[in-house]
Amino acid sequence: MSRVLVIGCGGVASVAIRKCCQVSEVFSELCIASRTKSKCDALKDSLQGKTNTKITTAQLNADNVDEICELINSYKPDLVMNIALPYQDLTIMDACLKCGVNYMDTANYEPEDTDDPEWRKIYEKRCKEKGFTAYFDYSWQWAYREKFQRAGLVALLGCGFDPGVTQAYCAYAKKHYFDKIDTIDILDCNGGDHGYPFATNFNPEVNLREVSAMGSYWEDGHWVEIPPMSIKREYNFDGVGDKDMYLLHHEEIESLAQNLPEVKRIRFFMTFGQSYLTHMRCLENVGMLSTTPINFEGHEIVPIKFLKALLPDPASLGPRTHGKTNIGCIFTGEKNGEKRNYYIYNICDHQECYREVESQAISYTTGVPAMCGALMLLTGKWDKKGVYTVEEFDPDPFLDALSKYGLPYQESFNPTLVD
Image (tube, rainbow, N blue to C red; front, top):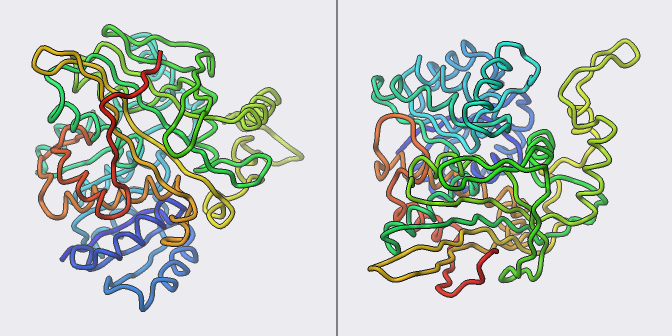
């Protein structure tokens, strides 16, 4: 019997909340909080009579620590699930520390304003020291480790699919199949079709910033950075077929490189169609992906925020998206002195997701792991104090929960490797 505060009410949060309501014996009470309370109220109304979970709602500005604390102190949750924007990770972590409550999120911190001089100074120092230029990295949240340890609290970072499940797959592979892992390739394939000329499957701001950034991968103890979309491979995905995939920088590479230091190379690939890439490059070329405010007819606007307002809401894509996703990890390494290859992955059907929780598979594959991570914390299966990423916990109960609640894994011991 637990009381949980969920901050956020977008596509991923909606899935996580609906899945929490399927496990009412653990998630006995939920408070859904968002800047737009009407969205929370609508979701609550849609769940009335379908769950034993008691649901309340609240309006919240998650950029304001005092406001978050006021809600936490009045509601007194056992856990805060941050399924808002990664811009708000630090304010919510600060509030959890002040109020003495456990924390989790689905993506690591990045700033909303990348032109902020104070942040920029720290960012540029990190770029020189670490060798990658992505706006997002774990250093800001890892800096909270001792604070959470001293407070006797846990902060679980990045418990979506990638990051999240992909890191659990790595821990599972190391625990059960390898004495030493040499290489990890994380492959994220969306074979779905929503019918629009251009749309993003999750928050457009975050998605487009990530995809248009420099790519990078970990090799022989250091970062190798490459121009955006400059490494392309074709791969035949089970349940989807042949797809073009491109190497991106992704946050779980950073934590895996630290927690599995023997791994020689870690790469992340994501599939994109040519239409998506053509639209994105055009928008980037004309400045629409910029986070720097401009003055337009006497009003200050941020181009990428304006673009977000024009694009379809990812939460609206569910009824029109058909096809499947395939996300997983391919490993090479050794077991008992013999070379071994291994592939663990999940296939998820967009329309099956919509029939269950009124969502497309991209939100589903992030929202279900968020619920399962919360389940691990609330039931005590994961109980280390401090700030951790998913691969630092026992993967077995987490993968069992994923299989039970909609994301079962498949395995191959003779996979096609990525060259």
